[in-house]
Length: 329
Image 1 (cartoon, one colour):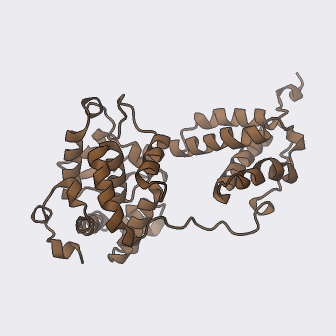
Image 2: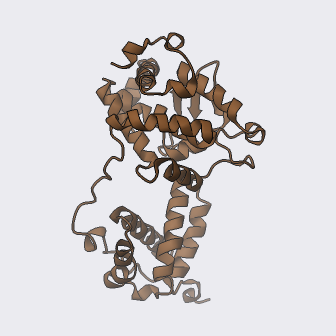
Image 3: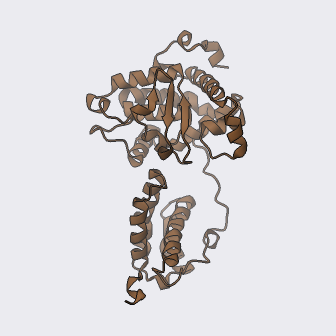
């Protein structure tokens, strides 16, 4: 049988094949699968799907994909990720002999964008917490799932996908811990988050405020049908809560900034965020960093209390062990 029969002719065939592999690839996070899958389906395939693989070139990609995406107001980061998805599909197809060669093998992002991709500016600054936190507490009373999701992310600096996939079995109020298992984390490393008195009280209130259908779900953040909140649904919640003024990831960023201002050790802060660390961190972890993380979160949550957090969890300062004047320091 001629091998040519097994080869893909159009970019759309390559991308459809690669997307099917991506959807069943459990070595990458669900968030990554959803994000890249959406980009390819919404932008790359409509723009380049009918183009013959051998006709793909820098000019074709720029004219039909990159420039239209930027003209439509999408950020360079989004266009860059779309290009990465296209290139990954072509690289694998070429390796497996499904196309004769990769026509974009020598293409890079610098062919389309002359400047550096700068980190997105922070949507929230420490001074904004005083304004935003009461709004999140109000959202918690009005829409418990959305409000709780935002408060948990701000309280712990967790990623949106990691937080959405929390199960009640991962949380132990008696032990005051929340376990983020390996399969739920971006770094493929388990994270054990210490829970403060404030968060334990908040979780208890959250269960009481939930609709019975949600309360019986194994998922902490469940929709009305008991299924977990998806990343896209969570993002929609944040757009509504923030009025598009900031994104969910900004809660993680502002938490990290505030930790530094509160004097939290750099390495402790990185471990709290579950950033990938090297061998030095592995050694440090064995020296009692769990207690350092708990103390850092207690200090952080006391700081949040002075800015309205207590409205959500309803504990008094005498119950948290931090007097109000210390919390405001």
